[in-house]
Length: 362
Image (cartoon, rainbow, N blue to C red; front, side, top):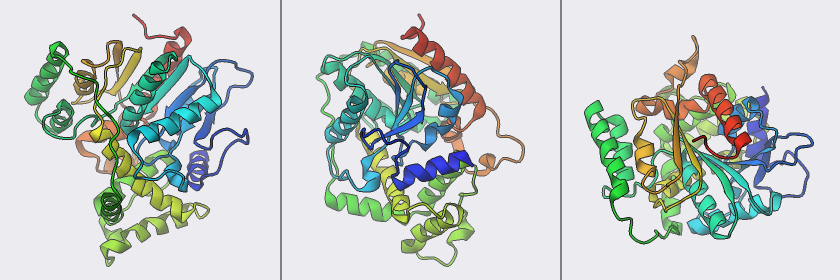
């Protein structure tokens, strides 16, 4: 399948063009002869752009769509780098393709922290960020219970009354003083990184989640079940995943598989530690219709003055589809939305309208 080949290409670290630009950039859709500024889509957890493949196929913007992937996947970013160094790498990659604004940026899920900081820094450098598109950036700014982000994520699993109370409390936060700008330069020590890597590579739950996402991205039977790990010790769990990749995608570099697995918690950790800064640019938040709709908006609204929210329905899994069996629980709309035809088609139409007029509708 085409999507499978695209994912394999990305995971090998191969380029899909020979333009001489930054290897962080992955052309997802090219518009011949267009002189319009491209739409940059920032890799979600795992560091690849696979979550955007369906959107890239569906969208027709009359401009290039370019993914930004994490150089950690081919060993060119140290995991102990501070968050600002990571962001600066992405900004340098963006500016290698487009030196000056207006910029069009998009970020799904954990990429939201990177998208917000990239947009803020570009503005700080005097550049115009025309639109920042955030697609369900759950779990931002939730380092501890004192942060509203902690409660916003916690109540996605809670009852309706508590979710409603959390939304109301979140909206009232706009009237509270914000204090000084947060310092977002959190890093991870070598020892913490080694421990995190060991935990991730030996976690059945995390490996099963990742393979479910690979399956949704590619349509290939990646998902691992409890029986696949039978008779294996925890330090052999990653070998189960590598074997599955070897069977389904024999050309994929095995080291890349392991790096994607490790990058996932690295980016999620950054997402949790990120403190949302004030940002005044035009920002559109897309949320999947779900029991937790409105919580992310309540989290972001006090900080982003130009925030507009759109809620899009996620279709039911097709009859016989394994996506209904992959065990995402209350967060199923979050994990499935970018792999769902109904959500992605509606998102593509909305993006076309937004990018044609250059700003959110009033």
